[in-house]
Image 1 (tube, protein in one colour):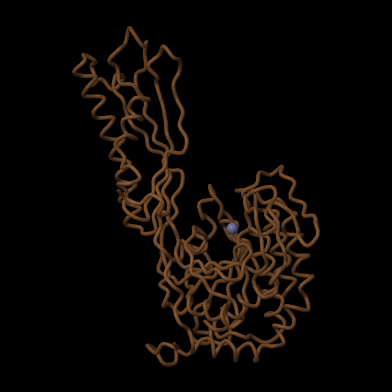
Image 2 (image 1 turned 90 degrees about the vertical axis):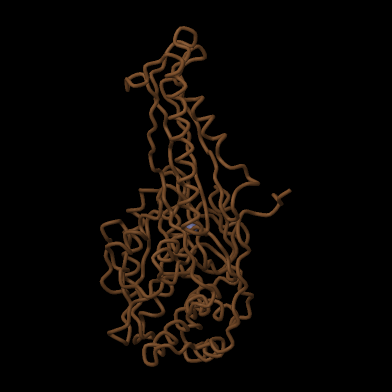
Length: 435
Ligand SMILES: [Zn+2]
């Protein structure tokens, strides 16, 4: 018997030891003590930004108003060359000291899962702020603004330039189109590293991204009367046979899943349907597992259609006539690449050490976020929380509490500073790791 109580994912790796980077982080905290004080001193302003940005609806494919607001704030806080790119992302820059250094991206996502008519106005209830999107990703956007505000005020603090990005299309049907645009043709093409600030929290570091492929399989046939036309290929029956061919849960490879999520079709109880469809999602941690599982699903449907046509032919239906045969249409719905940044990568170690310098426990985690896209391209990427606590993401009852809120912003700042210093040292002495 296989163990089905085990979740279908790999246990995330343990965070690596980071003694040298922690020493560097402690020193950088001292060097930049004024910035750290400012994060604490202006914490109320960060919360006001968080509530204001959350109050602007940003449904999937409807992020433009929120994008304009972010572009105005980034400009006001001192980012340069702030623009809205062809995909709809807001991008801006904080200059670095080294003109040859490739940029590090710090990003948060604009979109929410909520439709345009949802009441997203935040309200305070005791020590909580309640609003759909207040944490995911109102918190990340607010932290991005605070980082900009404190870093833009003085001379450059980093060798590498910082590319600030507020992305569209992170959630569900957005299919990561914002971050794809940023890397395909946009400002992040040259990026050396990518950090996404997503939601609340101060301990988790997402270093591995689950990929998914979502398809609608639609089978069409001649249709007909259930008695008179018996023998013609039946699209609903074909879907059933195809799904029955797919591996059962105890036969799937580890860290790979498939799910038939929605189904529809048919005309009447006494008719052979003309069409039927089912939506199937596969997920995996590794691209090759994802492709294998996706191919397995496609083949099951192709085989079921071919079998049904052969059977109908034997039953006397002229399936050589395309009007009499069943055929398959496959419509892609979503495609999120899988990827991972190894625990020993400098960016992961920088995030782990920044967390530990603040006396917080670092945890590596797996999730599906904007970081999937750079991970799949081989660009080191992590997604981290932007401070505070939250619950109820993707529900109308979502809330945020500002416990360790400033620490989340400081952790992000410190991750950038630790990464930047070690990356600059590597450019001087290539091949030497800092840890
Ligand atoms: Zn999010």
